[in-house]
Amino acid sequence: MGGLAETRNDKAVAVLAILVSALHIALAGRYDIFRDELYFIVCGQHPSFGYVDQPAAIPLLAAGLHTLADGPFPLRIPAALAAGALVWLAARFAKMLGGAGSSELLAALACALAPMLVGLGGVLSTTTFDPLAWTAIAYLVVRSLRFGSNRALILAGVITGLDFNVKYAVAFWIAGLLVGLAASRERYILGRGSFWLGASIAGLMGLPTVLWQALHGFPFLELGVAAQGKNAVVGVGAFMANQIMVMNPFAAPLWIIGLCAPFIAPNLRDLRFVPIAVLTVFISVRIGNGKDYYLAACYPVLFVIGSVAIAQFIEGPAKRAAAVIVLALQAGFAAIAAPVTMPLLSPEALSAYMARHGIEPGKQEKSFEGAVLPQGFADQLGWRDFADQIAFAWQTIPASDRGKTAILLDNYGEAAAIDIYGRRMGLPPALSGHNHYSVWGLRGQHPTDLIVVQRKPEELSGLCSQIIVVGVTWSKWAMPGENGKSIIRCASLKIPIEQLWPTQRHID
Image: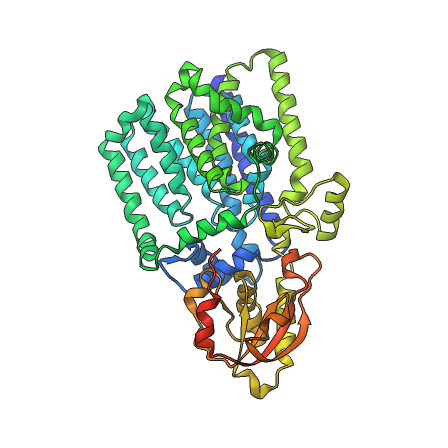
């Protein structure tokens, strides 16, 4: 009888995981390519072991996927598959910890219904794979602790190396796990040969991108310092309140219990290193004034531990009914949040939905002030309009002058939009000093005239002999920072572009 119930639970989890991936895939082409996705594509078209603001894996993947179709659909498939895989892994983790069938479903549903995790599964980003990778690393470490598996530690090293080439943030998780293990009785695992073999593999896999950063003066560290000033300052209380909301308030008991249970439940005491790791990451995020999603990858393992702890007490009709009610509340909240985390509605309908429910776009950065839609959606919209408007400005330039004119843009989103969409309209490669665009320099151009996009044309008076405003950027649903900028023809530079270029670099 128990085997039959176990099979049913496994099938239910598999169906849930497939449904999660299928829903993301069904919605993958609903809007358009996200700002960062455009940038990843352009970076990946210039293969490298590293980039100013990220490792190589996501740009190379994005560039490859973009060859399959013009729109966002192929870019989103890996993210959709990762979201489903996380649901499945959470259930397997709970099962490995000895949890009953109910714990598997609790953990899987918590991962499927957390708005933040849902949102991360909707676009290709450097953060997309962190929840899956961090949970897998913790799973393998626990597997090694409980079953003496050396292979698990080696595989954990491989996954660490892979994720490090996706996003450097996995180093914080590894540091947290090391602190947690060193502070607990499970520190003996640090002396195993398989641990050091796994660590060596991870180090070798990460070495190319680290060497690239070293050869370029570690610009990623410069980016981290700049981000502290760029991100909105949020107090601890407001930050934690937001964490509760974005991870689903009705799932909060799971992760809170997940933090506490290893210090209370005898069968979970060997997991004390996990909450210590999470708290270590939390402190790092707060010190660095990090965004709310920086902690998202920590929650699945807490959901797992909390689900196993709670399932021990779910016995009898009354307790089972209470569990069903809590799950129903989680599902209800996720349904209300779904239009804000997935592109279910048109921009018009989403704007009305948010107004009707009093939902305001999150202000992760100071520049997000005035946004109508969540940044995750707004930054998928308006880039084709931007490229069209720059192309229109380009057409106002006499054909004889176009060969000596370049397009200088302030940020990588604008520049990538020109490189992806504008190149098809005959525009030259975009110039920008922002992040990795600064490494590419003038891209073979030596202009004496520029098209510049900025808010105050008069600020160019010391640079240009003649200033001609030929348009204004605007797209209804774009981020507010991209609207209302003047499109300016800067004729006859007063100083050579080679002298001007070093002043354009900014890493943020």
